[in-house]
Image 1: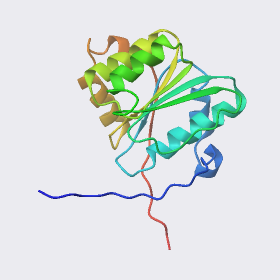
Image 2: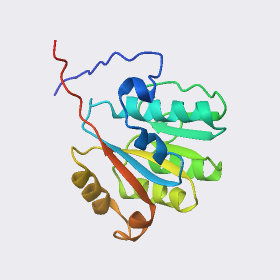
Image 3: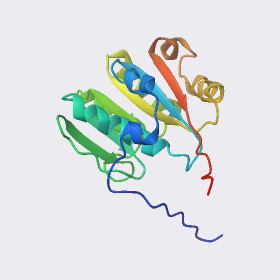
Image 4: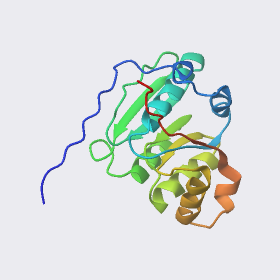
Length: 178
């Protein structure tokens, strides 16, 4: 019926995992292949967490990173790697199309800004099955809800998901005490 606008202020600098208080175990998950899920509600910092983790990895390893986002919120610095950031609707029609392009480009690490359709999950699982690391955002408020959401989307039930899922990290912002 009318227009609505949501405006968020983001720093140009991607925060480090330690400055966000992220557990070291989460960073360790990025040293494997498979699917790592970062879950949380809208506005709960999932994009910041993912950008922080990827930027941190680019400081340690020479990686080819593709991010698929709607919109691009942080511009990543390549550091030791190569970065290709695609905005869905601008550089790729859909998340599934972007994942297919990342597969053809032989990306080492792929970020799917939203895992919300069966085709997107199928593309993420195909990359994970080929030994790639996929970090994906799922809109859910608990690990159980995130896994259930993935099971609902899974094209073949739970088989591919069971072999590819490395971990689920759920976050919620806590109001400032001030």
